Image 1 (cartoon, rainbow over the protein chains, first blue to last red):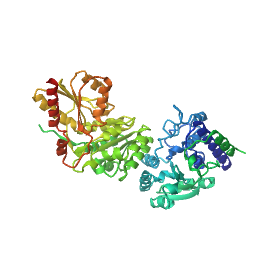
Image 2 (image 1 turned 135 degrees about the horizontal axis):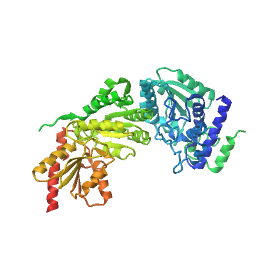
Image 3 (image 1 turned 180 degrees about the vertical axis):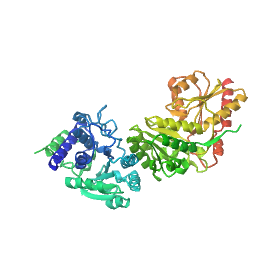
Image 4 (image 1 turned 120 degrees about the vertical axis):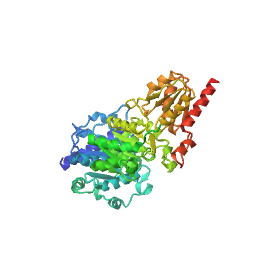
Length: 270
Length: 315
């Protein structure tokens, strides 16, 4: 997809996230908005996948380790055509296809997520399965910055380098906030580039809202041999909704009706 | 009469190799205990399908889910304590919730681990696995049944937990074909009904022989599948009115005893039930035989408890 159209698509994704959460009355806008550029780029410009055949064994895999940001994933999957858009308006309802955190009943979701810290391991398992089966698919995994405080993440980091998983690309959505406040105040994660490098990863640092940088980083990651790739994407929590930007409260709170109207106006095409 | 003694884990390792030869989808994971769990046998034969995760059980279990989502039949092994305790969240949320094809085969369960002591003696693992939806729980009683259980687990889609011991277990000559969820009725008897799993099956059979010599006839049932529990067999024995004795090398809370008692309670009968298990305690160091005596799990303990009870009920 060309950059102009991609930009439009991302705006549309952000609108869907807001509408979906407003309708649901609960959920996680902040981190969904911060990673919207990254995930939309992946599904529309980078990944090999077919919404008509979600189980294609040769498909590239995406695993959203920070499962609470599933409104973003659901919006992207719906825009790709994995399921009808109407499903978005039933998010978090009893019997809905779209659960509060991703589960395998949703077409396009491979393994459930939501309990933080496990997703990089899940992605590693998919990457190792590709090696066993001699398939050339790639595995992408989105991590939250608060999430990497979980020890399991570093077990997976160590093992991914040990097994030289160059078919694995992780993206850190470094928006700087977690539920209780700023990451640096709750539990600092710096020096973050050095940590991943020390664990044997090839690290790229980018502006997670700059589409050229995002696409270039994914393309570069494909060329890396014998090492897993980490893209540290510096982002803004609540990106493009003025009153949500860098506000920890919007980690896990849906917008009110009044807030929704303002947000949609800010995200409109004008 | 000397019985053949086998390590269940030896049988496990050999069975994995057997399965690996037939089915290229089988992959095996371990967490730095492949020598003890015997998954190393598979690793030697199929190095491309064997992954050692080092001392990192959480990573191993979550990675197992990722592999299974790509069509692999994944066997993940370590000691029962670390498999079910350390990695419980990964098993629940990444494996079982997505109903993925991961077989957790844990060795070194129970106090018969011996000298390593309480930190390595899982007495809660059946409970921890039984409470997770989609999970099946199997506790084979000997070597040959271990082989049958591993093969059956590989053939059954979805997550399965198989509990194995560290020590050598005597081989019990079971005629019935192994089927997940179907208990083996090993002896018939109208005076008492003994349910057991794992190493306690042999102890129950020994107790049965001692009691038979004293004129007390017991039915011994091998409850190798703790979940799904064989309600039909339990129901049939409730009708005999004989008291139930449930034997397990495990805490009384949540394991086989609880599973059987839930069926009894649900039926609303006044069937008498006594538990022969570890009563809400940790284990400790010692030789397996010494510990079985200390925690009152031997054949002599079972026989004595039943004798005393039956006398009381008659009196």
